[in-house]
Length: 330
Image 1 (tube, one colour):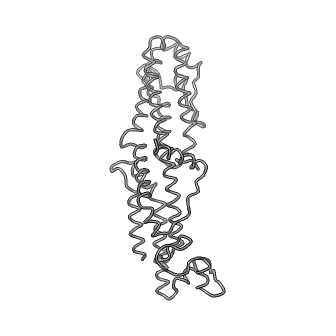
Image 2: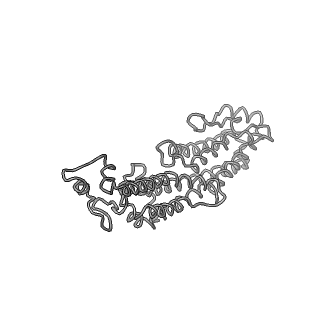
Image 3: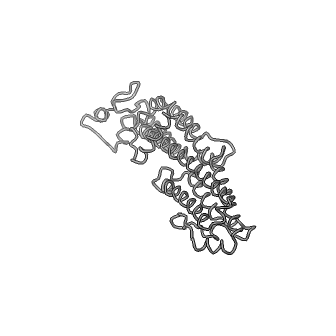
């Protein structure tokens, strides 16, 4: 296939990976995440193909180009034997025994690009599974906020310091479970590292806990003022019982109002994160489109660029990939 044919197919794949919801900042970010690395590889492939074409036009030829590609590899019989030794002799239709498309000027670069697509196919499925679990967990945190707010309407709870503290401690435990499960996944090497939807979900719920505006009307400066704070290093929540007791003794009504307002606002923040046309759903939509595109076009992509190496997922990717397969069967 000519370099122009490669460019045409590459552009089609780039467009499909970049599809997203119009008017959404998170969707735009998703498009960049999906497309940037692959677009660079495709640009390199086009450049290398054109370079090889110029080499052929100048008399260098395919064999000479391959010898340059393999660092000057040569065999006793010259270029023909070098090609045969690499399994690249002949330029017939179809792929070589090593899965390269020999009709391309630079089959090795195309093969590497297909290897990248194979890896992305697995990674996108793993990310879809992980982000789906995060979406479900955000919804659980929404219910935790709603439950806390509802308890502040229960006279028996708000009149009993121990019962009120127990409700706050229950919320703290659920919040810390959330952090423990997902914070590592956005760090370097995590499945969702660099994924805006995941990072913002963690950040927004943390900011909701730290907000100083809950309870302002009743003279309380947010949850930190009554003893519920976030450790800046670990991002875990903790409840200072002595601080809470002192605030209840001096301004019980204000504390109860602050906790109720916090619970409602926290639940609203969580609900927005998983709402239509927002961060998590947009990212899942982008991942789903990328997965579907690769599935629908993998055979034609391999016919054009070569088979590529099979993906070799890490343990965490393999675990999430298995969860993705279970999702499909459910």
